[in-house]
Amino acid sequence: MNPALVSCLQSLPQARTITEVADWWRVWRSLGSLDTDPAVLAVAGGFAADRVGWAFASGYQAALRALVPDLPLDTLAALCVTEAEGNRPRHIRTTIVPQPDGTLRIDGAKRWTTLGPTSTLLLIVGALAAPPGVSKPVLRVARVPVPAPGLVLQAMPPTRFVPEVPHAQVLMQDVRVSADALLPHDGYDAYVKPFRTIEDLHVTLAVLAYLLREGRARRWPAAFNEELVAALSLLSQLAGEDARAAATHIALAGALRIAHRLYAEASPLWAAAGDDPAARRWQRDAALFEVAGSAREQRAERAWQRLGAALPQVVDALPLRAQR
Image 1 (cartoon, helix red, strand yellow):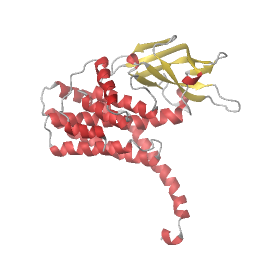
Image 2 (cartoon, rainbow, N blue to C red):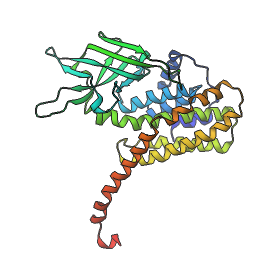
Image 3 (spheres, helix red, strand yellow):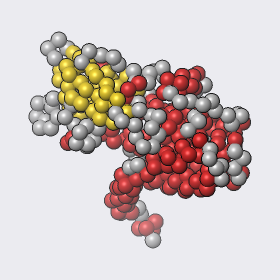
Image 4 (cartoon, rainbow, N blue to C red):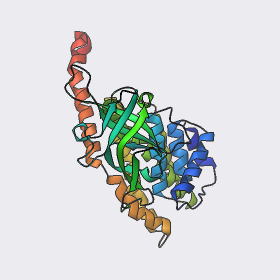
C-alpha cells in the first residue's frame, strides 16, 4: 500500500493554514525527504493541504515528476503547452531553433501556465525545425530556467475556483538554452498526451487525501472515509501502470467515476459544517472536478475502441476449441 496512505490513517488529521504559494511550496518541498515516489508525494501533499487549491498544486507537481522523473524536488516546475489557439499540435506556434553556436533559440507565447508566476523551471513545448524528408515540424520539450534573458512571466487573472493557484502568460523572445535542455522523444506523444492522464491521476490522489484528512478531523462517517481509502489505494496502484495503455485509461475512467461520486457525497457533509471557511471553499472549488470532463470521456471511448480493434485478432489467433 502507498506508504503515504498508511500515514494518512495514523497521523493526526491536522493541517496548518496556508494562504500563499510560498508557504505551500515550503510544506510540499519538505515532503520529498520522506519519499520521492510521485504517488506518495501526491497523497502526502493532499493530506497536508488545508484546501483543494493546495491539494491540486501538490498533485500537479507530483504529476510532473511522474512525467519527468529527474526533475529536482526543490524545483517548482510548470509545463507550458497552451497557446492562443489551443493546445493541440496544430496550435503550437512556439519555435525552438538550433543556432550556429550550438544553443537553441526559443520564441513564442504560452497561456494559462499553472503555477507559472512562481515557477523556477518551465517545460516549454515548441516546434523544432523538421529534419530532412519530414514535412511537419517536430514538437519537443525544452527545459528553461527562471529567470532567463528574453523570458517574461505575466500573471493572469485568478480563476473562479482554486484562485490561490496562480497562472501565467509566458512570453519568450530570443530565449537561449543549451542543446541538452531538450527532453528526449517527441514532445506531444511522450509528454503532452500522457500528461493529461498522469495529471488526472495524481491530482485526484491529492484531492482525495485532502478529503480523507478533513473526514477524519470532522469525524465524518467511517464508511465514507473507508471508501476514500479504497479509492486512494486503487489510484495508487494505477499510478504504477503505463499512462499510454488503453487498459490504464479504462481503469482510470472507472476510478475517476468513483472519485466524483465521493465528491458528491462529500457535499452534504460539508453543508452540515455551516458557515465554515473550509466548507465555503469546497463549494467554490467543486467546479474544478468538472474541468475537461468531456476529454476524459473521449479518452475512455478511444481506449475501448483500441482494445476492441485488437480483439478480433486475438480471437482469430486462438485454437478453434478455445474459441468455442
